Length: 615
Image (cartoon, rainbow, N blue to C red):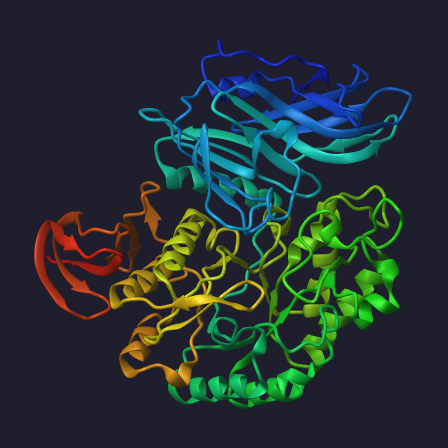
C-alpha cells in the first residue's frame, strides 16, 4: 500500500460508476469521480484492483494498487467518463500526441489545425470512437471561466481526452501491461483549473509540469540558418558552405548552420555520407567551424531504412510485431516520408541504447556537432508493437532512448521535431511547434496559428522553434514533407511582414530558411532586425490572436495582426502618453495618449509597434 505523509487517502474500488450532469460544474465532476480500471478484455476490474487518489490543490495524483492474488493486464485507467455539462459550441484547444497534431474548433465540431493528424496520419487508435486529444485541453465556454485540464507529468503513461458535444472521457493508456499481485503503479499527475486569464492558467500549468520535469535549459535562444526550405533533401556540400561563408561575412548574429537532412545514404546510417551530397559531411562541418560558426546536424535517431547498414546488421534492436519480427511502420500507421518503410528503434534494448549513445558521442566529440535537430522522434514512441522490455510503455522506451542520446551529445543543443510532445518533457532544449512552413499565405497563416496556440510553452518548457523565417522575394517551390515540390509559392510584402511579426511574437528560435546569398538588401535588413529573438513569448488575451503584448525594459511591444482577406481596423490601448514607432520600417508614428488606431490594416498583414512612455 502506498503511504503519503500526513495525508489520509481514500482507496476507492476501480468499478466506480460515472457521475451525471447534476454536479455543479465540470471541475466538481472531476473531483468527485472515483475512476475505474479497464482490463485487457474491456471489462472493469474487480474491487481487488483499486485506485488511490491524493488531491493537492488543482492537482490529483493517482495510483493503481493490485490487492488481489493474481496478476492483471490493464488496458487503461479512466479518471472520468460522463457528461461535461458544457454547451456543444464551447471553443477548445487540444494538444496532439505528436507535434504535427493540434485540435481547435468546438466540442461538437472539432477542427484539425494540422494536416498530419495523430488519428489519420499516424493512425493512433481513439478509444470509444471519440475525438481524442492528448496531454492538455483548454475550454472557453461563453460567459464563464476558462477551463484547463492537463497532465502535468509524462514519465510512463499517455494522458488522453476523448470528447463530443456532450461527453468527456479522461484516461491514461496503460497499454495492456501486467500489474503483478501486490504491486502498485503510479499514474501521471492530473490538473484541473479554472480562471478568467488564459495566460495565468498556463502559468499555473507550467509550474506544475516543472515540478515533475524541470526544463532542460540551453541559453541563449538559438539563431542560425537551415537548409531544408531552400534546398530540401537535395542539399549539397556547396550549398551549405556558400551560406556559411555568407553568414560569416554579412550576418555574424546568426550562430548555427543546420544541415537539415539530405547528407545520409539511408535513414539510420548517420556516420556515412551519400554520394548526392557532393562531399564529406565532416569536411563541411570543419568549414563551418572555420567560419566561426557552429555546426548543426539533422538526425532521425529512432528510424532506419530497410536498406541501411544499421537495420541489416542489427534487426534485433527494433520494435517487433506480433510475429516477433521487426515491425515495418506502414503496417500500423505511416511508413515514413522517404527511404521507407521505416523501422522503429527499440529504446528498451541495451544494444540500441549503447548505439545511440556512441553515435551521438562520435557526432559531438569527433565531428564537432554542437546542435542536433532530432526528427521523426515519434517512431521512438510508436504504438502497436512489442519492446525488448515487456514491462515498458512506449513512453518509457522513448525516454530511455532520449536519455542515451543526451549522454552522448554532451552539452549540445537538442531540438525535437515530429516528436511525441509530452514524452519529450525535460529531455529536449527546443521543440518544433508547427508543420513545415512554405512561402505561401496559406502556410504563413496555418503555421502561424499552430505556433501561437503553443506560444505559452516557449521559455517555460523549452525554446519553441516556429520553423524558418522566410523573407525571399521570388516565387519558390512549396515543398512537401518528402522533399518533393507540390506547387509554386509567392507572398506579398504585407504577408512577409505578417510572418516576420508572428515569428517575433513567438519569442522562440530564429532560423533563416532562405538561400542567403540571393536575398536583396531590403530583406537582409528585415533579417537583421529579427536578431536576436526576444526569448519571451508575447501574451494574447484570446485565440483570435489579433493582438499580442510583451513588456520589456520600460517599453511595450505590441504585435498586431489582420488574418482576414479584407482590410480591418485595430486599436491598441496603453497607459498614459507614449511615443510609438513601427519597428520594421523605423517609421515615427508620433505621440499618443492612451490609444492608437490602425485603420484599414491591409489583408494578411502584421505590424510590430514599439511603445515608449513619455513623461
